[in-house]
Length: 240
Image (cartoon, rainbow, N blue to C red; front, side, top):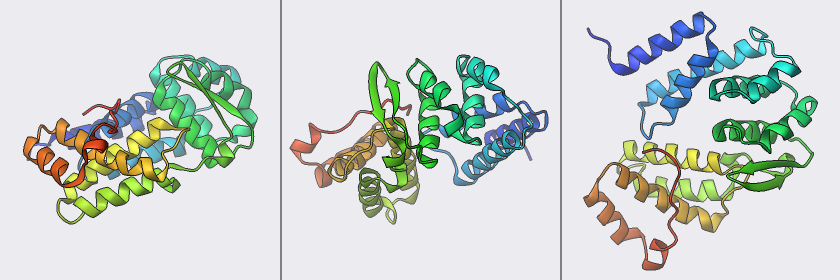
């Protein structure tokens, strides 16, 4: 039996992992996870391999001293991903000057969000400033909530779940993935409960547009979106 695309990707990732080519493997994983739809089993395998890579980094299969970390954080996307994953396994309090320097600079957007998420998880109790598209945002990670605990994420997810979880589970899963990505890219900011309703509706509209499902889009707008809400829908900087 010929292997399908997903099997071939997993074989490539496993081969790269065995060769300890974590940069290349991590890059492929991030690219695949950025897709608007992936099979659940495939997503699970990707996340398992990503965890293995993090575990390998944590077990010091890769060792980055301060000088190398600064070099990698200032390097291409692959090196930034590796450096940020390495930092995630460390006590970030010991690297705050380096982290501040990186976040205020022009690093990879996704890597910055990953690092911000790590700072929040470790409840760092010092003010951090991040440059996001030219806008400087200061926050204290200890007082920022993980995505899954924010009011906006949960109100958006509950709306999407109510409309699609039973009626169209596959579409629900696609919407959930887009919602997570948007909340992730919005870090360290978070949507409030009221914004979350508009966010959930925006995710649905955006996905219908990506799929070019005009009938589904028209039906959803007629049933769930008022004229006022149409003017407030968010546009997302994520790939269809």
